[in-house]
Length: 281
Image (cartoon, rainbow, N blue to C red):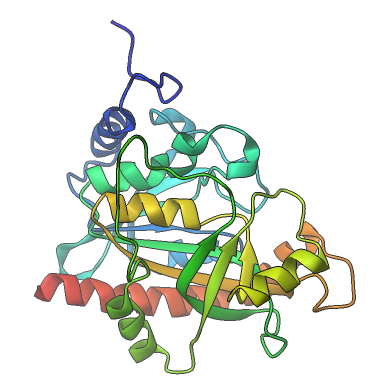
C-alpha cells in the first residue's frame, strides 16, 4: 500500500501529519513537543536562545515537508528542551502559498505540530507596516487577520470559529514580558509580488495595519487543530505607498538581520513565560 500523501486528495491531511509526527519523535527522541514555533524572516536566531538543542532534522527527511524555497529560512525542524521539562519544536521550513504547492503543504507543519502534542503555536513573519510610526525592526503582536488569499486550509463542511484566533491570553503574557509591544491586524495577500500602493490603501481602509504573504492560513489550521495561537510580525519595511523607495526582498533580509538579536531575546523571554504558564496549568 502506498504511503499517505498530501497530494492525494482522498487522503486526510491529518494522516500525513501523523506520519510526520511519528518520524519527528523517532529522529529527535522526544515523544511530545508542547510549543511549536514557525520562525519567519528576522526571527531565526531565536532558536539558539530558547534552550538546549536536542536534535536538528532536515525538513525534507520528514513526510510531507520540503526545504523552504525562500532565502532566510533554515530548512530544518529543531527540537529544543525548555524549562519545566517542556519541549519546543522550531519550524524553519515554512511553505508559502505563493510557492504553488497547495494549501495542504502550507499548513502541514502546523498540523504536524498539533499531532506532536503542541498546545501553543507561535507564528512569526517579516512584513510590511502600514502605520508610519512603525520603523523597520519593530516587533508587533498580531491581534487579528484578514485573509485575502481566497483560500482556506479547511476541507469539506468544516466550520471553525475564529473569534480570538490570536489568543488574547497569550498576547497578555507577551505584553507582560515587553509592555511596549504594539498590536495590529495582519493582512495576508497571495504574493509573491509585493502589494501595490492601491492594495495597501485598501488594506488600511478595511482595517489592516500589517501586510504580508504568510501566517493567516497557518493560524486557521492551528485553530482547527485546537491550539492557541500567538502571532508576531517583524516590520521589515513600510508598505508600498507608505514609504517612498521601492520594495525588495533584500531589504526584508537586511532589516531582519539588523533586528535579529533583539528579536531573538524577546521571543526567548516570551516563550519562557508561556512555558511557565503551561507548566503551571
